[in-house]
Image 1 (cartoon, rainbow, N blue to C red):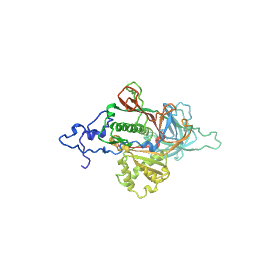
Image 2 (image 1 turned 60 degrees about the horizontal axis):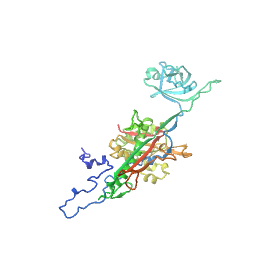
Image 3 (image 1 turned 90 degrees about the vertical axis):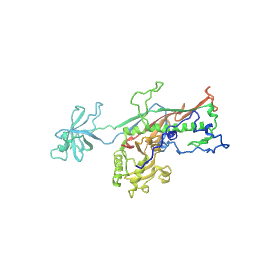
Image 4 (image 1 turned 135 degrees about the vertical axis):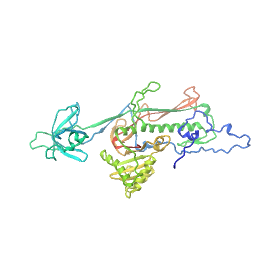
Length: 481
């Protein structure tokens, strides 16, 4: 069978899975006496430059593309999201005669039920549909609110047999499409309160540090090293310090993507509570859309495009935000490429690049390519986090995420003005006394910093932040089955 052979589990092959913020010297970092053949009169030929065999190893950048970062000065961020405008139920029951329906009781909060006499409704199951008039409301019993109805489109005024009682087998669907009142009626419609849902999230504190002793700071290596941010030289501890910083910055993004709320009591070694926070994946799985087994391109073209259309149909039921960004792993990105290649009219030429100031060049420079399907524009790019073998590429269960390019305008108490914020954004703790977006400080007695008698340099990193995933019903998480 064709495929990749498994490399031996040597230290060299496992190094990419076990990054080391080194505290000492290793044979693969420096040349040792054992590396020298003293029977020869010449020193070995040494390549000074470290080989960058993994390229740019950082995976951060996703949130910089789709979100914003804003300060907050409390332990919790709370926001409200509008409810549906129209009235609908998918848990409707009917009696055996088809003259009465019941919906879950509105509760004991004193609010007027959302259905009331005079409303006209559509009741259906599968392909069977009746249009009915609500005559009156009965008393709540067993947690259900009953209503007497008369069907417009049957001779008896009762629902069709397929919608009656146990015959319907499953709960019925219902939505209100209007109302009707007789001449001289004293009824005046039904008062319906505007609905909304409140969500909240809380920040978590992330910390890390890099430590090196004074002797190793003074050690000069024979290998020239560089990092992703351009730091170079022959002092290995500088590389380790900068890699610790880069890794911590990756953790800031990964935590906002992966974090979840703790479902049990967790405490750290000092007894402090560990509560977690709701990250992107957790928010979508709880409040958004999840599409399983996205394989749009490996099947026949009509089937592949029809699978993608299932996503569009679900978006139609939600917010129908026109512009959306797809962040995908390699297999799903190629799957969509294959799907589009089988079409004749769904390429980049038919796409409006409004989210990028209508500049195709700007979109391409950021790594996005676009296509249009139905009333939606999609901008597709690879997400390194899903491909890297030391992050989600190791698990390969999340195949991608669809993020709407929508914004909401709110008054920001911290800034004192109206701002537009994307549906996906970060809030970090900050005030006039302290900014905890990304703090770093040095302790010890090495490197010109004298804060203690410890013969070491300790570089500390700290951040306190949380993710706000607003309008999560417009996000789609693509998962493998």
